[in-house]
Amino acid sequence: MAVKKCKTCGALFDSIGTPFCPECVKEMDYKYKVVRDYLYDNPDQSVEEVAKATETPEWMIMHFLRDARLTMKNASGLIRCEQCGRAITSGRFCDECAIRLGSKMKGAREAIQSGRAAGPRIYTNDDRRN
Image 1 (cartoon, rainbow, N blue to C red):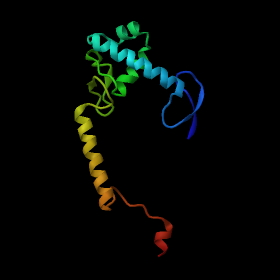
Image 2 (image 1 turned 180 degrees about the vertical axis):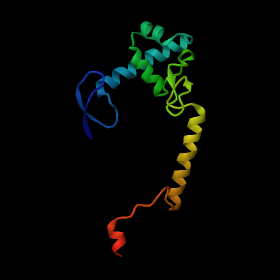
Image 3 (image 1 turned 90 degrees about the vertical axis):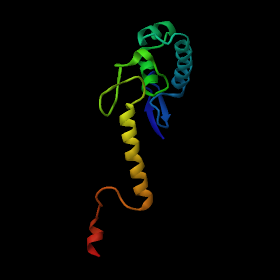
Image 4 (image 1 turned 30 degrees about the horizontal axis):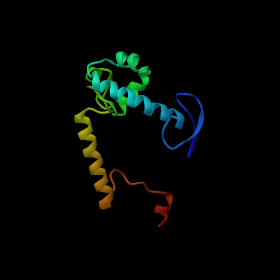
C-alpha cells in the first residue's frame, strides 16, 4: 500500500488504488445515490442542473460519468473517448474503441497463455555468454 493525499480533502491515507480517502469515498457513494435517484425522476437535466438540485459538485458528477456509474442524456459532448476523441455519454471509450481494445486484450491474453510472446524478446548479457 502507498500513502496518498486525498484529492478531495487533502488527508493522508493508505491507498489501495483510489485517489480518495475512505471518508470521501463514503461521501461520494452517498452523493452518487442522491444523483442517481434524482436522474431517475429527471432524466433530461444537464450536469449543472443536477449539481444544483442535488448539491453535488459538478466535478463529482463528471467523475461518476467517467467511471460509467451514470449515464445522462445531456452529457454528450462533455466526455470524449480517450482513444479517438468522439463524444460519449459515459465511460472512457466509445463503443467502437472499446470493441477494438477488447480484441487487442483478448489477443494478448491468448498469446500469453499459449506461450508465444507478443512483441520483441529481450535478451540480457547473460544470454550472450552461453
